[in-house]
Image (cartoon, rainbow, N blue to C red):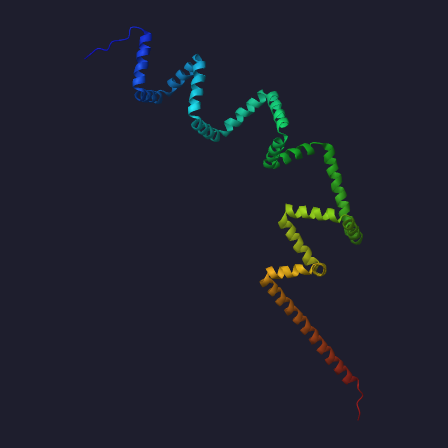
Length: 284
């Protein structure tokens, strides 16, 4: 067996190891990988010790690796952030507490540089956290005793108004009618916004009102048809089946009313004839 010759100095040993690694790079990497897998704690401690001893080499090595593996590193960072969202939030919170002035200055500069983008970002954040914002505002509002007293007084006023409306319905209706005539555009806009905010509730309220006021509904429909005769033609042209069904129902109801009227007229005539016969004097 041939005895290997040992290098005569550490420098020669390092040079010999470097040449061997350059000639057997893949084999050397595999051997290092197996050793790190079998000795994780020692490998971690060794890397930390080497980084502390060689900060310039470490930063240069990292920059070089990042430049050649940018997409891979970004994907790894994205996966880690997704899997460790709590850690990310905690890191941001600690950094924000330690650098509050720096953050305020950075946000102020960003708002001044692009105010439209800042407003849009603020709007999106408020839309995503609307419940949290409302809860915080409610807590601040009800913490003020003056607001509590104001709410109690408002409740008393609402109760008084309810009792007044129940006792004077005609006055209330007249007052509402006058207000509507004076603020028609404003009320229409408010009703339109309420419908857009909750269309299902608006449809239910509309059905209830129409069921409670059929005469008003017929009068409004008659006035609308008189003012817009072409709307009925357009609707019938686009809804032929429904128009035929409505027409059939209307004629059936009209025939029913006519037959009831004729029956009532016949009954009335029969009673008149019977009464006339009774009232005639009997000739012997």
